[in-house]
Image 1 (cartoon, rainbow, N blue to C red):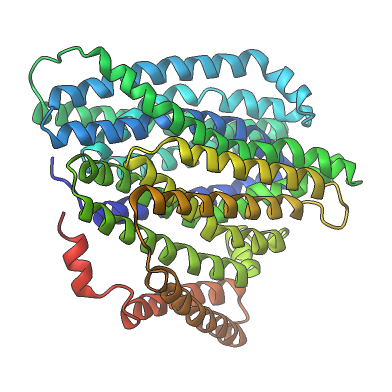
Image 2: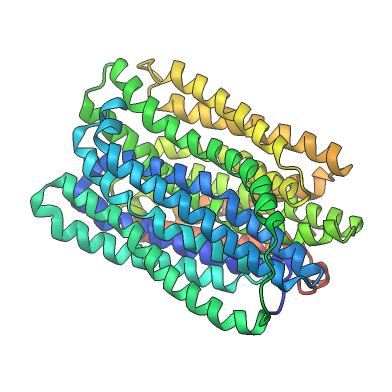
Amino acid sequence: MKKQSLVKGTLILGLASVFTRFIGIFFRIPVQNLIGDEGMGYYQMSYPLYAVFIAVSSGIPIAVSKMVSERNAINDRSGAVQVLRDSVVLMGILSIGFTGSLLAFSKNIVYALKWDPKAYYALIAIAIAPVFIAIMSCLRGFFQGLQNMNPTAVSQMLEQVGRVVVGVGLAYLLMPKGIEFAAAGAALGAAAGGIISDLYLCSKYVRVRKEFYRGLIMRDKGIMEELLSIAIPISLGAAVGGVMSLVDSILVPQKLLQAGFTSKEATVLYSQLTGKASVLINVPLGLSVALGSSLVPIISEAFILNRRMEVKRKVETALKISFIISIPSFFGLYFMAHPILNLVFNKQVGGYHILQYLSISIPFIIMAQTTTSILQGTGNFRKPVINLFIGCIIKSLVTFYLVSIPAINVYGAVIGSILGYIAAALLNLKVLKKHLNISVNYYQVMIKPLYASVIMTFFVVFIYKYVYNYTMSINISCLSAILAGIVVYGILICALGIFSYKSFKKRFMRK
């Protein structure tokens, strides 16, 4: 199977991720229209527990990616296949245990977290998904370890399309029974998407397996031990990130009640934070996840083969890409929050100020994710976990104290997110500099993208107002401004020498 370069792999996964995120956003339009902010609140309350499973189990596919890449680099094909087999066993045990626990204790969880009792049905529905997500994650890690991102990209798109079609269909069919049942129908889409993705990845693996390795698999007990030693710290770190979302689902509704809001008002504000603002923030974060997925196996291979200069070059490239993604995303969502919400959520613009302020966290989240991937690729698994845990503590404390203040309310969670990820990103950079002895040229990787983003923002705002004066349509003006911004930003990247065609061809088109 042909390997892909860092940026080619990132581009493939990035486009797939953007596609799936946008499909996910537009999934929310009919669902939002059907069940409103109240129903979305029930859906969003259950989702963080599912996200915790994704976070807890995420260490295994990343470990698979790293271990398969290293074994493939030294032509140990048998070992690479056994890594996949052992990972499926681990994920199977983990997912069945998690699903069983949620199904058994759903009512207790709803009561203990003081959620609205109607959120119970969505929690039951989403509890089914982990079993199917487990197999999918392992197979994606295997293909990423071979440095071929195509199967992962296709499976992501299939998963999301299945989730949208089934989720929206069930929400519509169950709406006559009540908002809570419609929210549960939307949640069932996650399991449907997982099943469709599994079918594709399994068929792809059967074909690739014949090409990749045809001999007997020699059992090596050390692989399971190595898999666990890599996966556990990564999973702990990802779990801390998932806990940040869970903190919001636990603290925000409770603290809003303490601030004097009614249960329904608290649910609506929480929905605007997690069902609108966070969803749009996750679109650029999808590109960052794609970068990390491509980065880990490539960095791992260069590191195990002792190619130090290549490691440094890839690190600098990754940091530059992360700022190229994050800075314009922050500016765009901050200054265009109202028209973007109007476009995406069909004129339901409640919570656009939340989106504005939450967008400030984008550069720090992406920097934390990128540096974590770099450190994981070079075998440093514990420090990113500790740094993210510190960030989680900061977020939790800030959220706990600020949300209960009526004048601040839900914005306390936004402030907590920003401060938590600032801490994690800065601590990771400090470890990265010490661990790899890399000196980052911040003018090239950060200041130049900042210049380009500022100029782009002036163009975007000008074009939005100019088109609006002629069309009086917020949606047409918003789309025109976004498309113009993409074109202008692309030109500025080349004009400022952030990336030239020559360097692009030299660094990215070749392995």
